Image (cartoon, rainbow over all chains, first blue to last red):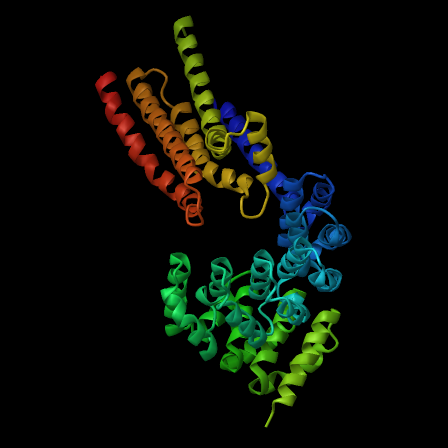
Length: 325
Length: 162
């Protein structure tokens, strides 16, 4: 082969690589948003769900998709697209997520169990942003319908805030007559959850639960309680991972024991993502008076552009001041 | 130069280019072919349905089949560039050397294709959270496989081209 032929074929390969790179670039990040909005409007359930997941992944730059996501999250469609659309909102727009929460909250009291079930699932999909919904969810924790109770427990685990209230609800669900509900209640304790003495006491008998799956998960949760994950590990995760939601929630569950993380949490109050700023403020609230050194940062956060973050900062300041000796 | 020599040279050039582009494009296509095949065989999808699923999941978070194809293609592209020079600049008057090089390169391409396809098929067939790690390790394993397959091909070729 001549050098010209070799160069030509090499050039074609480079061109192919450049084209592939361009296609990838066009379909990722903020550039993908218009296509994903079209997919949300396609009417095909799977396409819509994948589009919602894509938008959730993109986060704030997907602001243009918020109206249609709200529409899908509160609309009359299938429960799966409602929860997927609701779940996409918190990383994009906290206020929009709260709007969805407000629309679903009254439906927890609906006479139709399917509506109550869907409401609990949608609230759970919103995650920690649906913190104000926890009281209402606890109100139907003894619902006569098993699936509703199951969804309520899963929602409480997903919202996770405020930690004491959620732990109380989950601990109560450990006594549920239905094994699926007990299983759902143990799961958050088993996978990195933090057990308080009351929860641990309620969990121990489940090690001998007649249902083998429940018993096994309870054993794993009790074992996890014996070896709690140190704060330093969560701090390391905060520094390493691109998604800080999980380590922040884990720190929130630790309450005052997460005092070591206060400087890091204070620095996260200026994070780019509103959801991270919100969770940092919520974690400081759960740390309480030990987070006093974060007060100046929290006071600055009272001017945050996001109203939900401002609200969380105000609540954190209140918790730090109120519980101060 | 005789017409036989010219024909031989042309055939060898065509062989080199076919191998070059087959290697490059199959490296890209293997993850997609495996996805479609598993969807059809395991999930009873029609061909059209499986292709639609592939298209939907190309850029979907958690699937990213486009990215997987690009990662998988990298070792294949390295082999393609290597073979373009290795065969493209082989001395035309040394039939034995050309044959041995061709055998080495051909074995490398076949070995990579077989290993990559097998990995993708088994990973998709028994899909779980850990299985996805295979996609990260596969390119490195394929890179390790290149000299092994090449050496094996060259060794085999000594039996044919003496």
